[in-house]
View 1 (tube, helix red, strand yellow):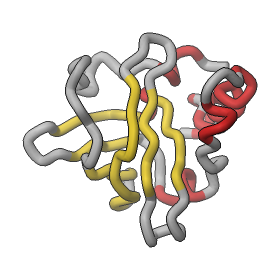
View 2 (view 1 turned 180 degrees about the horizontal axis):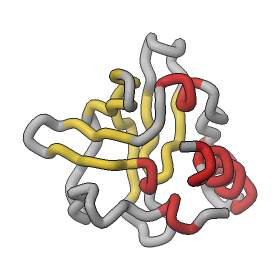
View 3 (view 1 turned 45 degrees about the vertical axis):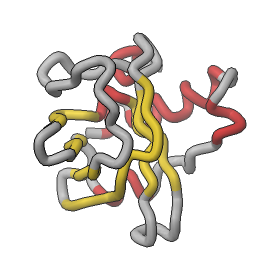
View 4 (view 1 turned 90 degrees about the vertical axis):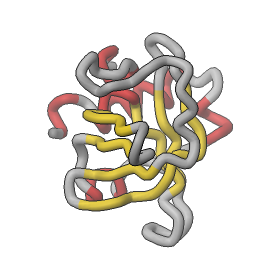
Length: 116
């Protein structure tokens, strides 16, 4: 697993403790939904994005390493993946998300640096 995937990039503008719930999430080629849940936990930071009607209510887990920029004024988060990459990602599994390191490995591998 790529450890860098689970931490915010230093240039992202992330500030620990800022509530990102409801922020709009922008892929490199358009909007993908809104933040439903997030974590700032060191080594395990992430966003859960509700894609709404775009992909029929699917929730996806985005490692914090995919975030390139957070605009708190516009309440938007930009990620370095395309809509297709996010659409094809494994669906967020709230049962496996807590306590299943293999699930985080799977997500981290999917979004790993080789996929840019």
